[in-house]
Structure formats: C-alpha cells, structure tokens
Amino acid sequence: MRFIPSFPLLACMALWLLSTVPSPADKPNIVLILADDMGWSDLGCYGSEIPTPHLDSLAAQGMLATRCYTASRCSPSRASIMTGCEPHKVDVGLLDDDSGRPGYRGRLNPDIPTLPELLKKAGYRTY
Image (tube, rainbow, N blue to C red; front, side, top):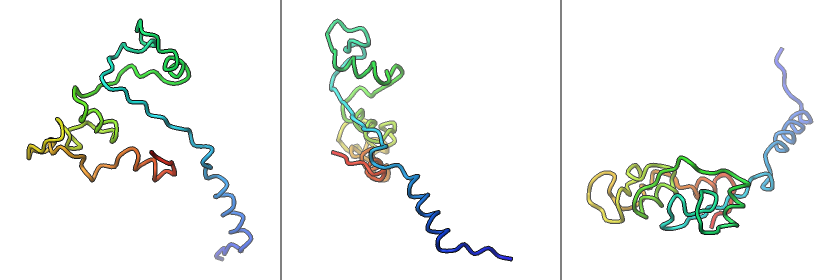
C-alpha cells in the first residue's frame, strides 16, 4: 500500500522546515578591515610599539591570523581577498595590465565568484 501524506501533514512539515531556516538575525555580522601597506607586526596584538587598542580588542574577541600570506602588490592582494583564490588563478598576477598570458590578464576572471557575490546569495547585504 502506498502512503499519501495528507494536506495537514504536508503543511506541518513545511512549517517545520521553514522554522529551521536561519533568520537574518542568526547570521553573524562580517566586517572586513583592509589596511594598505601594513606589516605583520604593526598591530599591538602582534607586538607593535604603536598603540592599536581598538584593533587589539577585536583581536582578543575573535581570531588571530598567524599563517596568512599575501602578494607583494596591491591588485593581486585585493584579488585574493575578493575571491579567496591565489591571484594568478583569477588572472590578476601582477597589476591591471593585460600581458596576454594566462594569470596576467589584469582583470578578475568573471567565472570566479567574489566574496560579496557569494554573501549576497547567502542573504547578506554587501557594500
């Protein structure tokens, strides 16, 4: 005998499924702080003699990044931050000049989604 669920049972299941979807209030806030030309030890939490109390407070409440690497130029670094990929993979291996070689096209590869695009799909507002 085949089981055919009734409308009230389907309605209850739908309400239960909808109640398990996280509300926007359940999503963590994400703030990305980007500082140009900052060395690894320029924050107080990493031993700097320069006072950075607000950033140190944020570090004390969150995560300290101790194994991060970056490209030596701004455009490839920003491409990595925006995509989570190695800069050559997203065609920004140097700056914004297109050398005609793979990895050095000078513009983000449109096939690689950016962090704001992924966050928007997850229901975040991005600015």
